[in-house]
Length: 383
Image 1 (cartoon, rainbow, N blue to C red):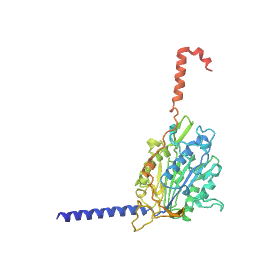
Image 2 (cartoon, rainbow, N blue to C red):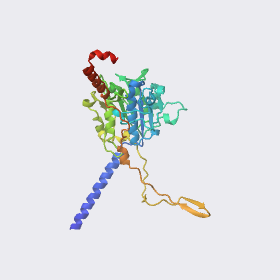
Image 3 (cartoon, rainbow, N blue to C red):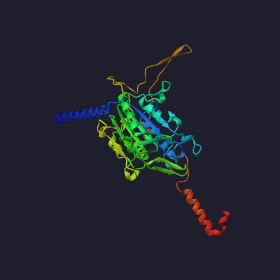
Image 4 (cartoon, rainbow, N blue to C red):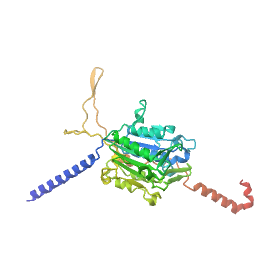
């Protein structure tokens, strides 16, 4: 009798386990995509727009960490803040105060920079209408099985986004570009994120299927900056992107977090503006859409029924003749990288500089001591 009960429990366990595996597999294949792409665009020039470059580079860092390679990322930066003569730390762009996190790094591949970042080039990248001489690194080589993340940041208004303070793209032009992409079978699903003033106005005219959109502010609202740094002299990021990236830091390639969790990022109590989203054009339930469907990358899988041992040495690959004797070299697999540690690692602070308000407070203390000791009649000796 006891054996029968054990057999029943074991069979129940196997059945439940197989159901869980099928559910996981069904969720994995539900999106129908086989590759991921990202188009990340900063549309602002000039030093005081430092935060827009940091916004874009921060998203770039996150999607690369989650598995999208540079070959599938089109990065457009309207200005080179890392090499700006006002930058106190050349070749760096920081997204956190006290210079804690350098998002420029040593492996940033910028595809369009400076005056190459125009409305025309952006639309040509989306629609694929580029000259034949354009290199592959500047092309969006997506297809009807591609999930695409499009991130825009800069200065905007009701129904438009400025490019370098010299031209602008309207919400109608953007909506028509996405419709061209759909008609030309250039995407499977598309996630559009914009961090700009009155950002929600940019997705009001969208009409293409399988498109989901998020914005940092509603019509009539400003999207505010965040993280002022006295040493650099500007704000380092915008509020919405800052809290978006805090959310993404907890995401890993196997994460089950879905889009409904992303919609809760940066409530009005943190953003001051009111973030918005639009899902009526999207065919799937946002609750079933994983964050990694857009911010991660699909891994190619080869299914085999054969047992493969990864601990045994590989077959002898080479034979070398040394002094007439045949010697064989045996190769073996090395331990894989500690992925869980790499995913959550954060750069350590290398250089110390005074915290916010330290210099101002120090000068105030010096002046107070001076007036206390010498009085105001000696003020002329300071100036």
